[in-house]
Amino acid sequence: MNDGSARLYTSSEMSRADGNAQELGIPGGVLMERAGAGMAREILARFGGERPNVLVLAGGGNNGGDGFVIARELHRAGHEVRVAATKRDLSGDPKVNLDAVLNLGVPVHDPESLKELLEGTDLIVDALLGTGFSGEVREREAALIRTLNDAGAATVSVDIPSGVDGSTGEVHGEAVRADLTLCAHAVKVGCAVSPGKDHAGEVVTVGIGLPEEAERDIEPALVLTDARSLRGSIPRLSGESHKYSAGAVLVLAGSRTVTGASVLSVEGAQRAGCGIVFLAVPESVAPALDLRLTEALIYGLPEDGEGHPAPEALEVVLEKAGRASAVVAGPGIGIGDAQRRLLEGLLRLVELPVLLDADALTNLAGTDAVARRSAPTVLTPHAGELGRLLGVGAGEVTAHRLRSATEAAERNGCTVLLKGGDTLVAQGGRPTSVNTSGTVALATAGTGDVLSGVIGALLSRGMDPYEAARAGAWAHGRAAGLWLDATGWPAESLIATDLLDWLPRAIGELL
Ligand SMILES: NC(=O)C1=CN([C@@H]2O[C@H](COP(=O)(O)OP(=O)(O)OC[C@H]3O[C@@H](n4cnc5c(N)ncnc54)[C@H](OP(=O)(O)O)[C@@H]3O)[C@@H](O)[C@H]2O)[C@@H](O)CC1
Ligand SMILES: [K+]
Image (tube, rainbow, N blue to C red; front, side):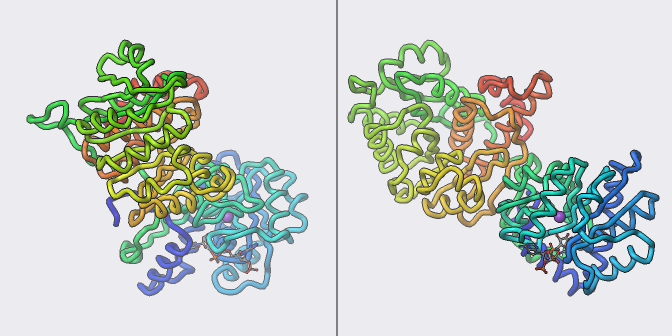
């Protein structure tokens, strides 16, 4: 499938494209030449004016080969360039390019002297390990990476920061912290998915003249979510629309002590353009929310003396679901047996698309309520909640984000949106999608509640769950970006309510 989304390449997809190019008569050396020369041009455009002293750290594979071409081109442009190479007995194109560097009189050193070489270096080019690397870096290379990171000079990584797994973004041990990563042909997965993304700095693609024919038979396992790939995917109102056909969302959120989550979820849904929102909350807080949420219909759920939903609450939820086209459940409902039973009943008896967030995920961890469902279900966990669903710690999810999201989607037969700076959307049979609009400003209370409402509204408007999750994540991040641009205020000052003002414009960019 390619719906126009920007491709992300895994290492094996890149080497297939490379193999196809060779079959088409384009030798690997030509691609290496184009990659290195293009990267050198990008470096000169950004740093050339400052006439930096450059050190290229080159490994023994083709990533190092790109590094030799960059060294040659920067030398040709009149820069002071030195190379530290981990291997001299090379073969193939890396050898050709090392020889050229030596013939031009560029000094090539052993990496044992890296620390001394870095004194007086303004710019580091990291060409140690590329897509041929995975797993854990050997100690010799790990020590070199530590030395590079300690040097504090501006660092440009070639194709992928050395030490990051290009196909997953995982880092086991040391990895270069780059200011800029120059990817040959296409962004590598490791530059888009955390923690690799956090090592890559700015990511720029450098064309290597790969013809379209070389990637025709490659179905990407991952894509980037951007406005271009989503445009036109959100259904519009037509002349015959009324408030129910425009999308009706039932929100099951909030509890006696937590009411803000329900407000944010409902208003997120309203701003994402559904026709009507029903909110089901414990009856003791319904009057207060009725005053606050002018345009929503509020229904009080029978509750016990502690404010937990009573068994009869399920009947009310089912009745209201009968008038809805999608359900959002979870924000602020609290954790407990009563909530779990209510959610299990909802999932068993309601055939509508359901989005489960926050406390709903924690309540349902360890149950098969989602896996048994055939109607569409979207889960929107952060790393801790996904860990609970998978029976592992949050740290395990953070270290293996891609694997964790896809595993949860496959086990439960549903759509999983894993929140983070690189929000991932995984669903069996679809390429995992990496959101591009995220910002650190979203790391604040309540933004997840808004997101649940936004995706709920898109589901209620008839969107496919995978597309609704991608579009919701993009619009949510974009709303934060628009707020940052408009106010010029620090990212730390955003509150979740601010997103509501900017969601309509963000959604508008996708229509
Ligand atoms: N494909 C294309 O179209 C194009 C690809 N291009 C470029 O090629 C790059 C891929 O090159 P690649 O495949 O040669 O591998 P690469 O990343 O240099 O790694 C091999 C080196 O890593 C080492 N090494 C491995 N594991 C290790 C470990 N655990 N710990 C430590 N070291 C380890 C391994 O050492 P060895 O095991 O051999 O001793 C060997 O020296 C790609 O990223 C891009 O830059 C461009 O030129 C344009 C076209
Ligand atoms: K590299």
